[in-house]
Amino acid sequence: QVQLVESGGGLVQTGGSLRLSCAASGRTFNRDTMGWLRQAPGKEREFVAALWRNTGKTYYADSVKGRFTISRDSAKNSVYLQMNDLKPEDTAVYYCAAAPTIILSNLFNARGYGYWGQGTQVTVSS
Image 1 (cartoon, helix red, strand yellow):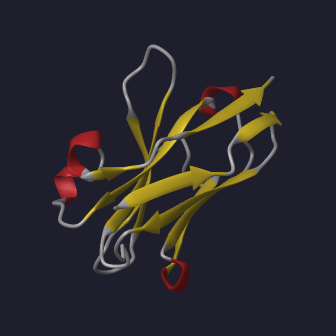
Image 2: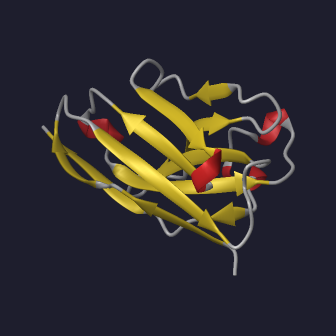
Image 3: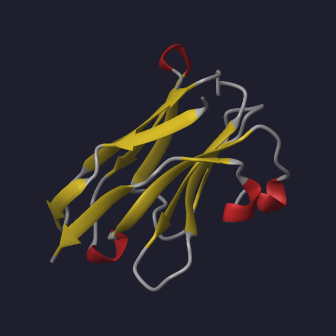
């Protein structure tokens, strides 16, 4: 069974840090494009960060650029999202997603990804 399982969410104060982890199982995801997306209450799921499968190039939403870092540990079949200088507007459920094949234009929306985790809640208090 193919699974993505996120962990590491929680409650943090403004300016704090969290590191989200996404552990993949069922098959190797080392050749997939991996992404993190988030969804706040009443809002659509939005792109946060991605790591392109072929080159390892990273992409970030403007709102998190310079604060968040996506990375991969191929040996552990895992992806991470280091989040620093968190703000209340970062509060959301964060989802790990994988795309075996994806075109660049679909990288930034949820439709491009075929595998999803269950999500982990991140709450930033002001």
